[in-house]
Length: 274
Image 1 (cartoon, rainbow, N blue to C red):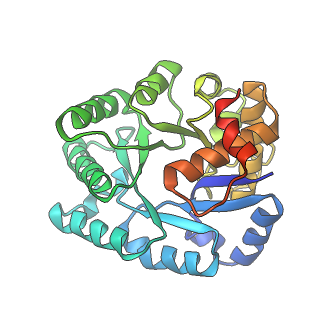
Image 2 (cartoon, one colour):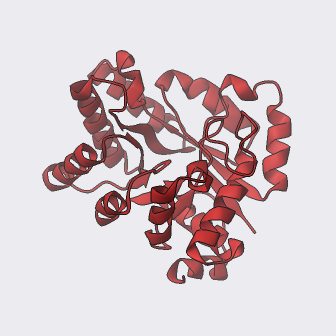
């Protein structure tokens, strides 16, 4: 059984003391690939060094919506473009998106997000989208972008929206990724969304070091090996075996991010099953 953690931040300080042991743990858990997201282009050299160290790591480059103090318009956009083109292991633009939970710099976020969508389209890369308390404006912006500039593919990462909101992004062709939140006792809305996403559009992630899933929530630091718990919980919610869910999410991740992983015919066929 193979699993892919489609969203990690193992460049964070929480992993610096024992990253080799963390890698051993994810390999023992059957995690065959990781997609390392980026919150700031300045992270690129460190993330690149991690990918040099662990060949099962691909990565993205972008600017997080809560880091708009670092957005300098065309200069930042050009930097992201150059970095994305500089390494074939870059598989996405992001993470980018909208976060209206605490921030009030709405217009700057919208500008930066649109610019990164254009980059993703220009470079034929998917986009990794962060969306918090912004589902309606996010959907509206993506619909306008689709109509005015053309479609872009990507994933709604660490998704916590309602089933209705989930359908908005499915209708736009996006994948939907579930994190440890789906294992939380009172996350009924997220659980309902995890049950409705088509089998060819669902992904799993840890978003580590954040959002440690059950049954490991007492640990302050999440890690890639724990995507196994996320997958197991999602499989139970959907009434399929862990092996089926793992095969589906692995095939979906390979397809979305064009990952260098060979899949068997049986693994490829699972996306047309339950």
